[in-house]
Image (tube, rainbow, N blue to C red; front, side):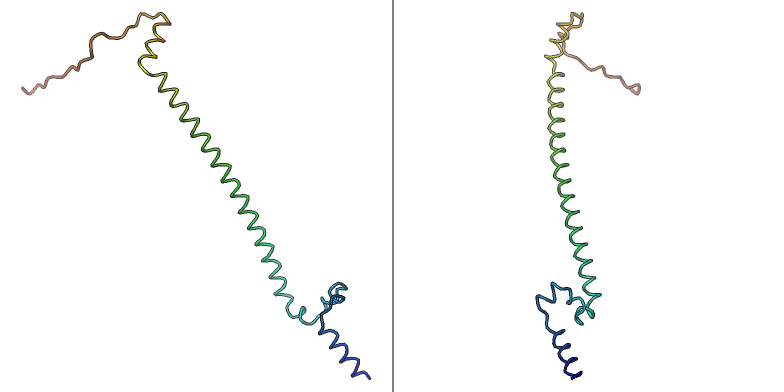
Length: 121
């Protein structure tokens, strides 16, 4: 009779049923006891994978934000450069001088170079 009870317990423990999973009896199953270290390793690696994926997504979001900011800054620099070019044109400077009433005038004769004569002649 005792031998029949142990055989029925072994057969019952080898079958995995929904009742044993929900009841928690599956944790006492011999397969899970033998593979506990492997299951723990799989869980740890899964958590690390999820964390790595989340971190990489956050970095991609930051890269996109920085690219947009860089584009905006480039456009601002281009705008400022074009404004500077516009303001430094000779006609603009002449208009500004005329409106300020200063005695400066544009030269009527073109500039010429003064060359230094060599002393070896």
